[in-house]
Structures are given as structure tokens and as C-alpha cells.
Amino acid sequence: MKKYLSLLLALCLVLALTACGSSKEEPAKTEEPAKTEEPAAEPVEITVFAAASMQESLNAAIEQYKAVAPEVTVVTTYDSSGTLLTQIKEGASCDLFISAAPKQINALDGSLKDDAEKNPDGLDCIVEGSRLDLLENKVTLAVPEGNPAGIESFDQLADLLKSGDIALAIGNSDVPVGQYTQKIFAYYGIDEGAIASKLTYGSNVKEVTTQVSEGAVDCGIIYGTDAFSAGLTVVDSATAEMCGQVIYPAAVLNVGEQPEAAQAFLDYLCTADALACFEAVGFSPMV
Image 1 (cartoon, one colour):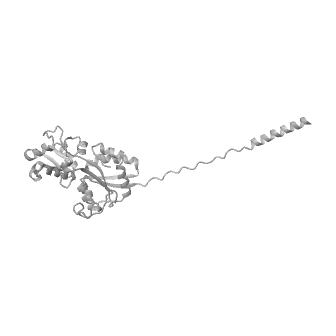
Image 2 (image 1 turned 180 degrees about the horizontal axis):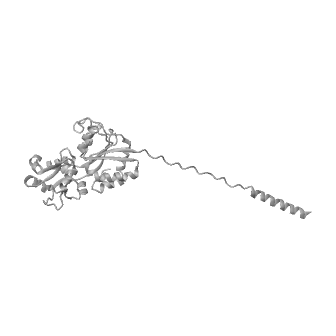
Image 3 (image 1 turned 90 degrees about the horizontal axis):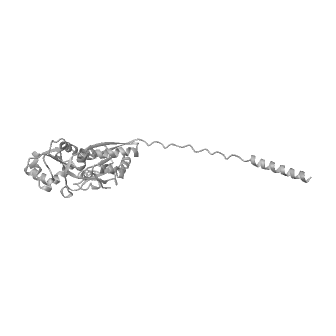
């Protein structure tokens, strides 16, 4: 009997263990949430007016920006800052303005509307808080390949203009590089009218640079960045005492269609990646 009970107990234990084993359930498979794709950003177009001397370097920065904001198309207009200012005054749509001198930005700055000298028309076209000094350049004396006239410095140029037979290319008086040239003339006591026969003019710095590149003149007063981009030899650079600092201010304008996108682009231009494009041709960052 005892043996029978032991066998029965063992059988019950086996059945119980089998039942326990068969009652285990496979863990429920949880479905992964469906991945939702980020909606593509709406395409946007911003209009940038920039000094002609920025053409090569700004184009390089814009090319880089395509990877940062592929939805943004940057449409550029390059010319003398004076010409660009006139276009803005005449109603041109512009989201971002980068000038080769503070004078043209001042003329649009509402914070200066009570200053008749800096903002003669009392315009208020700049988005508050967006204005900044972006870059610094140098005014230089550049010569054609081989330097046929043997020009060596601004000091020598001043003597030659007063007494010698020399042809010099400069910017018009409404062009920043031409205005810096006028300061250099004043520094050396040169009467521009008295040497008019020795001067040729350009409506922007690129035109002056071309005259030097083609050997149409003995030398030209242009920015160091333009001399670099054109492969010209620089024989001298003007000091701040001679013509002041060559500052490139930038500002988002309220006469454009895309102020927020323009501000984002200006913010990008202040980054190390973008500034490297400007430094590569000789600009010095100011931000």
C-alpha cells in the first residue's frame, strides 16, 4: 500500500510539473510605433544685396548654407554699396543688406533718423537689433602683372600723381572704395581735380580691379580681397590713419519679404564655417 501511495504521489507531481510547464505563455510582442517622417520645410527665398567686393566669398558661404538650410534659396545682387542703397530707396525688395561702409547702412537706420548727416532722408528700414559689423577689409594699392611702372607705395604714388606721368584707377565718389580713396588723397594733400587727367574711374570696385588686371592703368586703389581674388600684386596697404577702418556692416531690412529667414542666414554668416570663407580671401571677422 505504501508503495502504491508513493507511486501515486510521484505521478501527481509529474502531472503538476507538466501542467505548470504548459501554462507558460509567450511574451506578447509589442509593435514598434510607426516612424513618422519630419515634414519637409517650406521653401523660402531671401534677397541679399551685398557689396561687389564680397562676391566670391559670399557665394562660397551661400554654397555651404545649402547643407544647413536646403529649403532656403539665397538670391544675390552685387554692386557698389551706393548703387544698392539707391535701389532700396527706390523701392527694391531686400531682406539683407551688407555694405562696404557704414555710410550706406546709416542712411537706412531708424535709430539715426534725427541725424540729418547720417540719415538725411529719415528712413527706418532696419529690423531692430539685427545690425552688426560683420567684416573688416583693407584698402590697397594694386598693380598689373609685372608692375611695369614700378609702383612701390602710396607715398611714391602721391609724388607721381603730383609730378609724374601715371595712370591710376579709382572708384567713383559714390562708391565706398572711392570714398576711402578720397580720404587717402586728403591725407597726402592731393587735389583730385588737379590730377583728373591721370585718373580713370569705376562704378564699383570690380570695374576698378578689371582695369588693373587688364593693364589699362599703372595701378589701382582697391580692396585687398579683390586684389587676392583677381591674383593681383598688392604693393601697399592704407593705414587707418590714412582712410579709417574699412568696416562691412550688415542688417536685416523691413522692406523685404522674409525677415526671419534673412536673420537666420545672417546668424549663419557669423559662424566659424561661414567666416572661414571670408577669411580665405583676406577679410577679418568682426563678430
